[in-house]
Image (cartoon, rainbow, N blue to C red; front, side, top):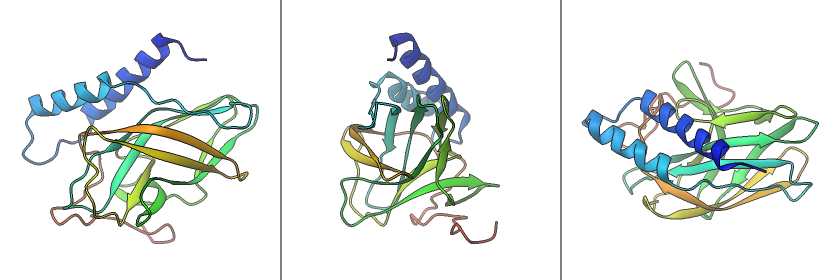
Length: 194
């Protein structure tokens, strides 16, 4: 379904987006480029829905985190090959103690995305730092770079997409700010004000 050229192009786009994001405090431009190059060179993750192989999640990856933070993001590209829109309403991962939310960033404020993520018929939707993404919250243990996690994406019609072996990578920060104490700066609930 995907050519190597399309997958390589997706990796280049993600690398460009990572370069456009803000670097964490104290990270040099060369460290930032090295982290981005590592992310772009890793293999893509592709998962298919059980129903007609119509939805995929490609180039998925998790931002590595230490024990000093209790949250992290998941990024990648949803592709909808069906003739109807698809709604991503939630997900689960390997961590029983964690909370899982679909998030967006609006005017620099990260918040839960009401109604989830709508992927148009025949279209795509990219999850990026500083934009829409999936969040793992309230997980105190380390999620180290070089590891992998498994995801189950929940769709609005009750079906799920299994995404095994999603790589964990060190990446640059986007517009969201996790703060020095691991608390999210500017985090607002879905029903909160901007």
